[in-house]
Length: 418
Image (cartoon, rainbow, N blue to C red; front, side):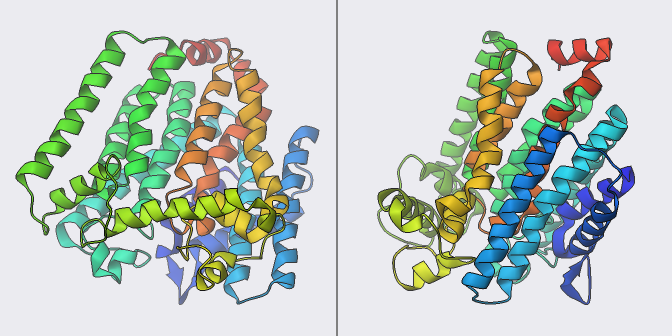
């Protein structure tokens, strides 16, 4: 089972780039289907009562989605979204079984799997930058406007950067458990390179904030904090310098710098260089609609309801670029409540037990990254990989006694010497 889970993790990254005949028969979809069958017959594997409650909550959400399809059927793509939601269940239970049955061995193999995937993505990104060619599942392969930005295995640069930024707290914590100091430094460098080249501003900001969280957890707001602060200011200076000396509308550095600077000074009108940034600011109009008129979204309008609201000129974007807004528009506050619970439960639990164990501290950071970064990607509903770090932290939380029984390992975790 341990290697099957690793293949499933690999398929989460490569998504629809490996398929037979049609992307519907991709490695990702096939392995998840096999996982569902395996889970159905693996009834002898024990699950703790508390964790079974979590699984029932996930299954209840999937049932709500199925109910909404029958009530608000629009097209076949709704079933595709339902199938991707089933990944949440398979990931939670398979990762739980992996941590429970194989403990540290499973954690090490999972870390190594992700570590080597990052190296593979490095070669793909370099290939994309040099040749302007992309993998089949990338938007850059069909849209020339995205040709300059690497996407690795993903659909667009925002999806790619979101996954990289989202994974870092999880990978960092795992590196503490299994003592992978050199590897986590390499992953940090690769992550920074991936996000800078893909130019997702939110993902870059969250990645740069990670050292602050680490300093806070380790109570090291001294020389290291000062070095990080100076480094951040230097990076900001380089961006400004590039903006000044490479002021050419066709220059990639200029366009990227322009995108970053619009965080401070949003554009008032649309032109070739700030169109994407203006769209990002329009997103706030989508959020405002949910906040100002919450009574309209108590129940929701079913899968892909945001497209209908866009056609009626109620919201300015067909795709809200937010897991939370998209989920509430589709299923309402009530229908989306199980997913909200999966996030609020560890959030509150980690805050309450913040000083009891390092696991709670990093789980809290992971939840913060999850909440923030899921406002970036456009195809977020069809990205099952976003649930892998959450599933892994849940598995560690419900099996915390297994890896803390080792005194040497416990000391390594609590000392957090990376």
